[in-house]
Structure formats: structure tokens, C-alpha cells
Length: 265
Ligand SMILES: Nc1ncnc2c1ncn2[C@@H]1O[C@H](COP(=O)(O)OP(=O)(O)OP(=O)(O)O)[C@@H](O)[C@H]1O
Image (cartoon, rainbow, N blue to C red):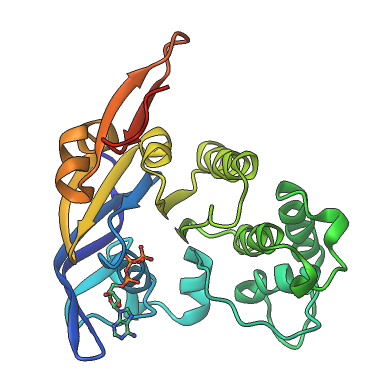
């Protein structure tokens, strides 16, 4: 088994006076592509924020490469982990280029401005997300899906070892959902990026995950190799939905979820 890069041990997290995560332990191996799934309100975002050090656990701890998160300064931590979430507040006139440039902040030594390497990384990130022609557009003028890609570009420019993404396919049409997942897969395969990603589409979690963790009511219901975790039995137990592993004529396997009441075609 590969070494752990990120480890959560016995996390208890409370928000607004209520315990949200109960004794959650999770091990993310270096180079993993981990999909995190669970019903609405099960604590997925809370877990991601805690893994990134944005939310402090009441009990338990998170370690990054064997060191507690608190041992890393903010700049060093940002060189290791990038978080892509959906809650964004932005100045009205911020351009895409300016946003993606923020990904280079952990590497900048003030008062020096952007160096040649920073500019190269920004250009690469814009290119990878097909946003080069949008560089001078105001972020707020972009569609929801384009904005999502701009945030992904910012995280790519950050060059983290671990990318943590909270439902990044929201707002994206199906082709762009696949493009985003393929892009992550490519950065995972070519650059060894470790990925922890919340996906609501269970088939996508089944298809892209090497490992999968399932949260239910603030507890880990299952974790391990995706093919062993994402099973019709578990989907029934955790989500209350019927599903089947379906193999197409081209030999690809999918998790097909369907309501019992769906009309047959
Ligand atoms: N700041 C807060 N104060 C109080 N309760 C909170 C706070 N933030 C989140 N919660 C509650 O914690 C629970 C878990 O929320 P969280 O956003 O982590 O779930 P989730 O699995 O990501 O949900 P979803 O799939 O709907 O995005 C929810 O019941 C939510 O209402």
C-alpha cells in the first residue's frame, strides 16, 4: 500500500453547537484518486474543510505527510493542498487572469511581482482549462460553468500535491463534466497529483475513483477500493436507491441507479 499523504484520525467536528462529524478516520494514499460520496448533509464539505485546515476539529487530528497541519505555515500548506469549493465571493472587476494569478501567491516573495515561472504556470492553467481566450474577461461575466473552470485553473496554477474538490461538476454540462474529470485524471497520471473529490453522480464516483469513502450521517459508512465499496447493496443502504453494475457491449462497467417507479423504455 502506498504511503499516506493525508490522514484524518478520529475527527469530531462541531458547527453551530452541533456535532457534524463523529469519530471520522480516513487515510488518503499518495497518488490516490479518492471519490467522497454521501447523502446531502452527511458532512462531506465539513470533512473537506477539516482536511484542508479551514475547520478545526474538536477532537482528533489531520496529518499531512506525517506532520500535523498546524506544523505548516499558511504559505507552505497552500503549496501542498488546493481546495476548489463552490462558495465564492469576488471583487466585481476581477479578471480571469487576476484570479488564476492568485494561485501563485504561495510562491511569491513580496514585493517582487510575478516571475517568468509564475506567468508560465498561469498560462498553462488557462490553456488546460480552455480559458486562454477569456483571460481578460471579468470573472463575474462568465457563465457558471466557465467560472467553475476559472477556479479549477487557479488551483492548477497553485501546483499543489493534493487537490481537494467539492462538487466541481456542478454547473457543468455533461461534456464539460467529463472534460474536467479527464483533466484531473491527466494531472493525476502525469504529475502524480493526489485527488480527493466530492461527487454526487454515483456512476462518476464509480468510474473515476481508485478508492471511495462513503459518509452517512457524519460517519464513514465504508471506505476502500472503489469497486468493492460502490456496490448496489451499499447504495441501497446509504442512499436508498436501486442500482446495478451494468456492462456495455464495449466491455465498460457502469453503476446505473434508477427509481423503482421509472417507466421502462
Ligand atoms: N456553520 C454551520 N453551522 C451549523 N450547522 C452547519 C454549518 N455548516 C454546515 N452545517 C450542517 O452540517 C451538516 C453537514 O453539512 P455539509 O455541508 O458538510 O454536508 P454535505 O454532505 O457537504 O452536504 P451537501 O451534499 O448537501 O453539499 C448539515 O446538516 C449542515 O446543515
